[in-house]
Image (tube, rainbow, N blue to C red; front, side, top):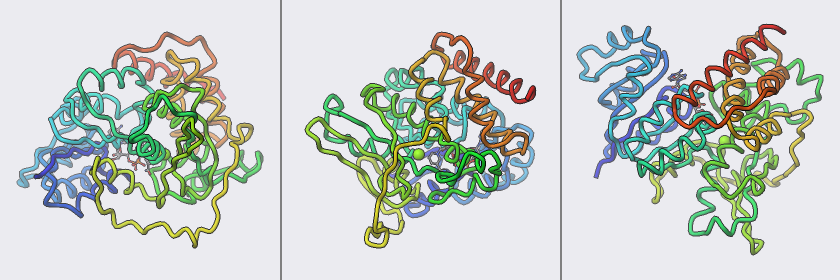
Length: 384
Ligand code: NAD
Ligand code: MG
C-alpha cells in the first residue's frame, strides 16, 4: 500500500535526510507537496525526481523561476505564504514539518487541521504556539510525532509506559562546538566557527542555536509541550558524544535511554515507519570504538540561553514566543556579521525583560506576539 507524504522545507538538512529515506522505498510513497523558501531550482529538481503533485516557494518573488523550471513537467508550481498553507492543507498520510523558524508555524497548523500525522522537526513552531498547537492536534485528531532526536528518543522510551510514573525526563546536549571555550573566546566566536558542529551536520540557524545552547532551551520548551510530565521533571545534561539521545527515569529507578548514530535519518525513519521500523542505511553504533560516554552539568554562566528558556516557559504567557522570535532575529544578525556571538543571548534576555502578556490563544495571536518581539529585538540590536 502506498502512503502519501508532504515535506515542508524539502531543500533543507532535515528535508534532504527525509528524501534520502523516501528514495530507499520509492515504490511505497506518493509525494504530494514539496516546499522551500527561495531555492526554486533545487526544489524543482526534487519535485521532478519524486513526481510531486505541487512545489511551493515561500518567497513569491521566486515563483517565476520555479514555474520556468517546472514548465511542461506536470508538477504544479505556487508561491507565497498563502500557497504554502494551502499546499500543507492537502490531505496526506504524513507531513514532515522541516521549515526553520516560526515561518513554519502557519503551514504546520494547516497540516494539523487535516487530522493526519505530522512529523515535526520545526521546534520553533511548537515553542511559539505551545498550547495553541497541542490543542489543535487534540481537536483535529492529528498525531504529532517528534523528529527532533532528543524528543524522538523520549517518545520511544515512553512507549508502553505510563507518563504518570516518570521521575525525570533528561534531555542530552552535545554542548556544541564551544563547550570548552572561555568567556573571552566566546566573545570573539565567528559564524564559521559556530556552524561547525562536532557531531551533527545541520542548517545554519540550528547550528548557531547548538553553539549558544539555545537549541537545548528551545528543546526544553518543546519537551514540556510534547510530554506534559511537569516542568519540575525536565532536566538537561551535557553528553558530548551524542550517543544517548535522551532518557526517561521511572519511579522504580529504571532509566530507559535511546542510543544511535548522530544521523537525523534515524529519528526521521522512526517517524516515517512508526509504529514499525525501516532501514536507514546508517552506520550502526560501534560502542567499543566510542569507548567512553561522559556527562556534565550545563554551565549556565557561559551559556545562559538554557536558563532564559527555562525562565520563559515557567513564566508562560507571551514569553516563549518572545524568546523564540528574539533569538531568530539575533541569530540572523550574528550570521550576517552584525553582532558578536555572546550578544545573541543578551538580546534575547533584553527582549524578555518586559511585562509578559497573557498567552496567545489563537494562531493569529501567536503570530502577533512573534511580529512584535521581532520589532523589539531589532530595535535592541540596532541601538547597541
Ligand atoms: P535548513 O536551514 O537546512 O532548512 C530549512 C528549510 O526551510 C529549507 O527548505 C528552506 O528553504 C525552508 N525555509 C526557510 N525559511 C523559510 C521561510 N521563511 N518560509 C518557508 N520556508 C522556509 O534547516 P534544518 O537544519 O533542516 O532545520 C529545519 C528545522 O528542523 C528547524 O526547526 C530545526 O531546528 C529542526 N531540526 C533540525 C535538525 C538537523 O539536524 N538539521 C535536527 C533537529 C531539529
Ligand atoms: Mg535536537
